[in-house]
Image (cartoon, rainbow, N blue to C red; front, top):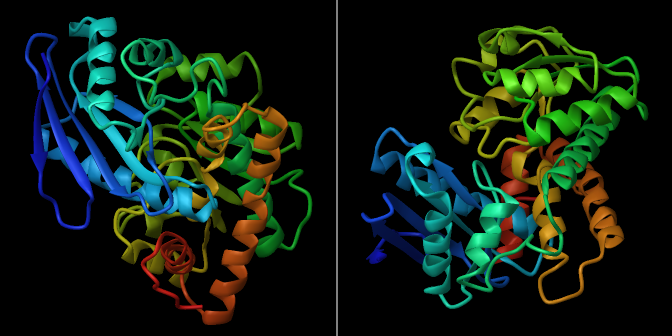
Length: 347
């Protein structure tokens, strides 16, 4: 049975902890801001180093969802759920059914979906216990839309930074080629890009080998690859004081959440004259797709059109950043905060 504990955390509307000793997990749901509508964000499953690391992750991710949903002009707030467990040692169906009960306990203030280590099949188990779950029987796997959105972000970045309308013969280094990174590699290969890849998961490498040609480097080498674009498509915090000085690219645009370890790392990229596509602007395709099933009949064509608008959003961010001589993450944050109600205009 789930046992719930409400946590009082400054800056967040609701943070709830769920313990279930019988199934064997601890989970958190964080609702950062719901000014624009119910909080939407996926359910991430991970075996964290400790409980504090899991709590830190859900807080960072839920805040990121507020900014992402606002900047995409969606009628949704920001939230997230994380589950701290070892998936190989628990009954997966029972786990996600209890997560469904957890989501249901918030009475619609939070809507979940698949995320890292959770699948459409898992969301079907969640849906047996709550209606507040997306993707099941409607929009489906969000990864193709996330990848397409990042592709649009790369097009915008190349147009602004390199003054090019085409991507052919550009070199893109992709960190992580799972569901989203792998699809991005395929989109870029169609434009005759040179693809360089690093991934800690050999299965991802083998799967991609069956679809496109690419060059493989060791995970620690990806930061020092000479390329036009570095595309982080794995975990967050990888742009920091250690890695940014190593970069040999002119653009950073990828799908990973929370790419900047700190906001100051956006300034570090700015000082190095590396154009940064703010992650929550670039990777919004998946949530845009999901939004097209909430309160309406799902329309894939509409989802693609809205995702394509990521290119326009980024061009606007780049224009404002250039005019104000500010890092792109600062401008994106201010735009998003205006849209969800913090009134922090700097442009």
